[in-house]
Image (cartoon, rainbow over all chains, first blue to last red; front, side):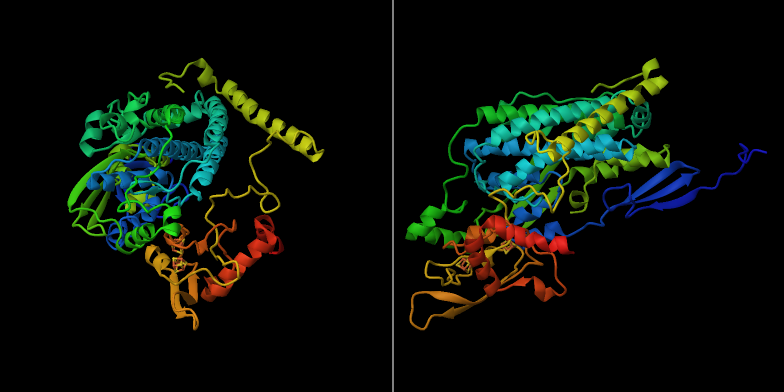
Length: 396
Length: 189
Ligand code: SF4
Ligand code: SF4
């Protein structure tokens, strides 16, 4: 006798998945309404990693916010650093020297590659392709070592400063990058061999978590999720900041807007990011890496040790902080997961009045129930993985 | 990587792809095994085998810029360089530096810290204190990572003695030796 008669009344079941589920890398809870294994509805509960970023910023000087921004999207902290610094510079009405801008572009793109590698590697390993996951983590490690050598830390980098960067790139930076990229390309080719025609992988990714164009725009999704639906919106192209307008790169687009498209968009973006870094290193001019304005940037140590004026500026800078004129600004950069915006209000003085972040994955999570409705429980994992929710950024 | 709209016979057969995957992983496995064997014989040391680093026996040296544990630098005559100006404590976003200033009986110009404590449980190793110091009195160039062994909160508070002794040790032993001693604790655990 079959245990599954078709007319058996089906009871819906409530299931709480998370907040610390081993397959969801990030503390988040899904309140699911299930019919058997099918997801009827899903309510996402975020906020488990809330640390009060907005409030903390109000108590810090403008420069002291930078370590906090490291901890937003901790997979690509450099982009957050630069995004915040750019927003404040915008409010100050200053522009950093060209070399600094090129450094920022190169470092942001390195970060973006790391972000994508982590996301893709984890997504692949969650579907059982753990080897591909390890290869990508290996590539990430290569880049991580470069970032560590440049900034002095692996994760909590605190590299940007308002009006510049902390210090210059090491002299053999381009050699390291060339070497790391050569290896990364080889590793990615291996991953492609493992995944591109792998039936399990395609079956699990294709047609799952579909978002239509209209829905993506209506929800305000950005980044790879939006581009996977075919909408050509990339902040780097739409409102070029830094020196992105001098770079030659393409924005990979998808067609269907499912997980498979997102995966492919991200993989293609890695290649484009590598191209940007190579171009930036080629074009990078010599010159100062920070503004020469003692009101915005700490004076050089030489001046501080040897001249009274330098010492005075130094004291004033530390004790009072940067004096940002009253006003408000919204500035967006393209983060690893989409448009990362900083809305900053200043009432004048040494501390921000309000710093609000537009986190890309928080907005993506708001559309999650639409993506998963009608699919199986097991599909939650790749869909969630391809959104790449980062707790630190989503919950702040 | 390209999107495959419709799976062909190759993908549907499933086994050719399994074999191809085994070839990729197998190639790496045998290559790594071979290179590791060569390494054991002392050959081909420039070739890299598996990425894994057998910490703490092996390690990747920290870069020059690495922000490690703090030290308070000393003047040539061995006295402390810090003038208790409180700039580092002001710049610190974690508010983890505690300074109590004292005066030299014979020198009305300069002060010195009676107490200088860094609570490393609060410290986020951002390096702002180093940047803020106007007389190069605090540095984070010891090349050792933050301490993580201790049985009470007190064990993590680094006071003036510890911080200055670290400078002397670094001077006497050099970075490499200091690190070696520091991680040797893990081998005993
Ligand atoms: S490294 Fe940062 S948190 Fe630690 S003592 Fe220095 S300023 Fe404070
Ligand atoms: S370490 Fe430097 S900044 Fe801190 S109190 Fe001493 S002299 Fe001032």
